Length: 290
Image (cartoon, rainbow, N blue to C red; front, top):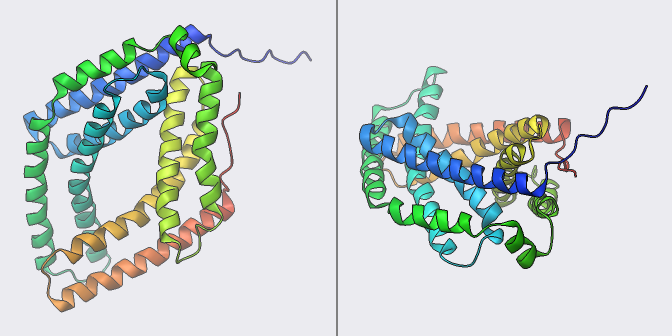
């Protein structure tokens, strides 16, 4: 039987146009959700905006070296600030969900904990509203358009002396290397910093594949699903750390503080066991090939 022909990669011009399309689409989604949040303060839109800002940052970092020098730093700084501003509310909401689910499982949660978190949530809402109104989207939109306008075949070859496919391959390898380095010791209970760094590295590699799947018209579903599985557990472990920080800044009676400490320790242990089992059952190896 004659083997099926190898599927050809798109040409350089097609890759370039798709890259610009992905970049603009990510930016438009940030602007759309910003408008929606200002108009309605819908909770789902707020959390979607945070994810959209992270996806745009991933696209920005990927295409950053290809663009002309200019105000790229200003764009990067403002988007990172937006993501961080939105993160506080997300942590509070996740903490409320976590402690409520613990109560449903039979644990007693004092109303004072809910009240303290709810008050903190109100403050985060105010902070987000202020930040979104101060977000200079007109100026940043101009920077985005100037950045994309400066990306073309000639400028890429002149500045980087490599093809786009080779550039994407190199970017993937550079993003995988810290994952490879961190995985070995990530299941050691004391290596919290390694797991934190691993979570960030895996998140970045996942966003890379989401972008490249569209740009190169390839199906990366298997690796994306595996990265999502890793990111989910590691993200939940990071949530436990964030919950501890939140609780440290709340005025709670000693018995309430002890209660939260016990259930957080138990959840942290359970998550580490699940993560260790995942690493052993589904080892994470390199996946992007040209």
